[in-house]
Length: 122
Image 1 (tube, rainbow, N blue to C red):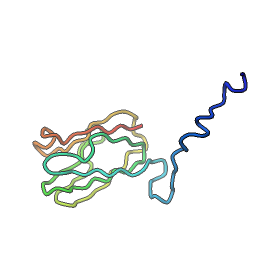
Image 2 (spheres, rainbow, N blue to C red; image 1 turned 90 degrees about the vertical axis):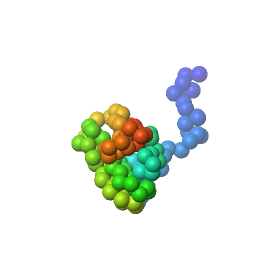
Image 3 (tube, rainbow, N blue to C red; image 1 turned 60 degrees about the vertical axis):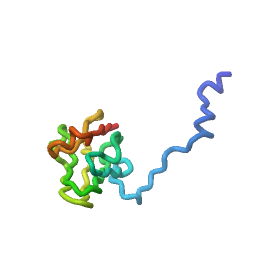
Image 4 (tube, rainbow, N blue to C red; image 1 turned 30 degrees about the vertical axis):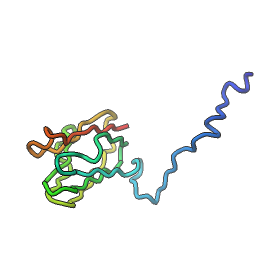
C-alpha cells in the first residue's frame, strides 16, 4: 500500500540511536574517547580505530620500552611515550579529511616488528 512505502517499522522498533552523553567528557563534535595501548613487544592493543573530528585518542605505554604514536599526514610523532605508564592525548583535528591513515610507532624497528594500524576518520 502507498502508506506503507515510507514506513520503517524496523527502525522504530529496532536498535535505538546511539546515546550521546555530554557528561562523558568528549569534546564537542567528537566521538567517544578512544584508548590505545602500546604493548611490549611491539604491538598496539588495537590495529583498527575509527574516529571523527574532535575525537580524543588517549595513548598509554603499558610496556617498558619507549614507544610513540605517529601519523605522517598529521605531522609525524603526535604522542611521545618514553617510559612505562606514560600517557598522552591526541585530538583528531576539526578539519581532518575523512579517510584512512596509518598510525605507527616511529622508534627504529618497532613499526617493522608490527606496531602499525589504521585510523579511519569518518
